[in-house]
Length: 627
Image 1 (spheres, rainbow, N blue to C red):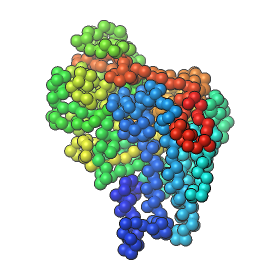
Image 2 (cartoon, rainbow, N blue to C red):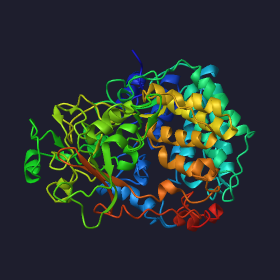
Image 3 (cartoon, one colour):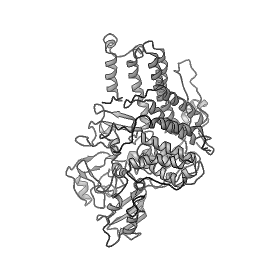
Image 4 (spheres, rainbow, N blue to C red):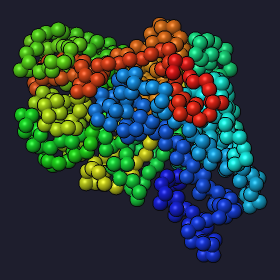
């Protein structure tokens, strides 16, 4: 049975009590002396385990805090309301000012903990030299990850590699540019790869964890070379060689691709051999409202359904009573491909397949009695099943589709979920018009709900205060393969890039392997594959910025540092008629300002250093460009 690093004060307190119980019999009962903490490896580890809170910024957060891990709210992956909208809108409405601190620039308390580990462990007479080396490597991993959390948002950091004392100069400078920041981070991660063991303990870093994150850090570092000038990516850049070498190290480390994609993100496969690093919570100190489930499950009941003239009613009238405000958009839904029936060797967008073209009359006028449209919405696409066709919109959007579609998204009548069938058609039991018309505040505007990341065994239901286990997956083998594919694309190695991206496409998506004819098509396939496989994993926003910095094929042919089309496109929603014979895709504000999507390329590739820091310490200057 796997061992776990369990975050949370209660669990850490139990670990400390167990490790130090003899000391606690004699020392004051309200504290543990510093000497005791660093006396043995076991005692030191209790401090180290609590320092793993650094990794929380690499998990998908609740959405209410714009600095949380829920960065998908900044993109069209999510059509959010309330907290999720509030988390994303400062970014996609371009409302951030130089006074805001969305990048978490002040990570110095976390860095101090890491430096304290390095100093105290190496000074301890009770810890062996071998254990000192291992624990030092672990502290360097955590220090690197704390700084990476800042660097990928702000680019510049205040590098501190010792425990500061009151006599030290506290007016330290920031790094001059992102390249200097990443050089420090990469060095720490390389030391971690060299010094950490290969042993796998769930929730704790090993050498493969450090190598896996290093593959992504090197890609970010490459993208931000020369910032704010255009990036000049060379196929011979040593950073690409680091990505490839470390990815191959991870692939050789005994991990394997998971066939049950959805299970990796719930209770079914929480110990999947694909997971390289997970953050694990236990029900003893975790409730539903401490997890993302609270904001992705809607608030629905039979009274709301009746007001909507909907059906069917729920057998358990109050089974869905969470605070849903985070929902998938039609934009991300359209990325899940469907196997073409006329040519099963290819997979296409659902509205590009031969079966769709044979069955649907596009642009057909749809009466408002069949599908209503709000006055502030604009029709993007519509269609009606042709007379005589046996197809439905359901069959065209579900049959032969990427296996991750059902594993990730609850769409119309897609599966039984907590004993109920969600029907999101017009006059269904869970469509967007229930919120639009004021029957409930938490049905969303998307006609879809997230399935990914929802545990199947929460008892009696997903509801505030209900205890539950939960875990996050900041790093896994599929992500490493995608990082490897990106490195090969940047090298111009088409064959190896396609082989790498097919690892997720075939194993997770159950789709036919892609066979791109050239680099331009390969980049298109890769970007779709990464978006689908890593949705809700705190990746897409940073990947879009990275690709924008590369420019060219990575960003729709636009030069390095230009605008990013995916960040200026509004989110869409799709309505389906009650008989599932017609559909309408619309854009609009959706009760907020979702139709306003702005990206200022002169400044938005990095966030500002909050002006308050610069005012207190002029050595942190200059401000990031454009701010």
